[in-house]
Every structure is written in structure tokens, then in C-alpha cells.
Amino acid sequence: MDGVVAFKTLIGALFLFWFMSVVLMTQKTMSNNRMGVREAGMLWMKALFVVLFVVIILTINFK
Image (cartoon, rainbow, N blue to C red; front, side):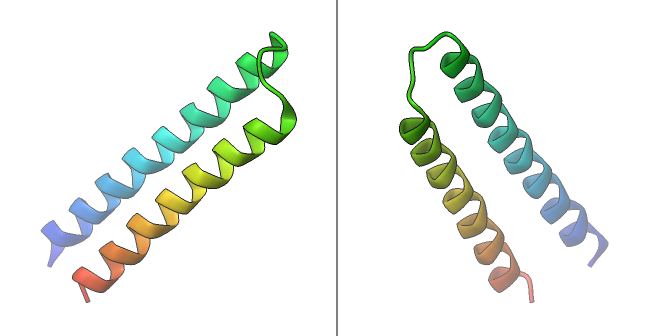
């Protein structure tokens, strides 16, 4: 059971890191005026949706 918890934590941390990098990337492009607030918001919502989707899949698989 400990291995499963460690695996879930690793996957969760990886996706959280990926989500944060997406946010930082969009903020950088926004400060360079290459991206509007709407586009950045859409990107963040997509990234958040993917993270939530993965968390739901992991909780269903390892109950």
C-alpha cells in the first residue's frame, strides 16, 4: 500500500509542477504582450482541467 501512496504522490507532484510551469510560461508571454488575458485564462483552465482529471483517475484506480 505504501508504494501506491508514493506513486500517487509522485504523479500529483509532477502534474502540480507542470501546472505551475504552464502558469509561469503564460505570465512571461503576457508580460511580453504576446498573449491576451483571455488566452492565458483559457490555457490555465485547460491545464487545471487536466490536473483535476488525472487526480480523479488516480483516486478511482487506487481505492
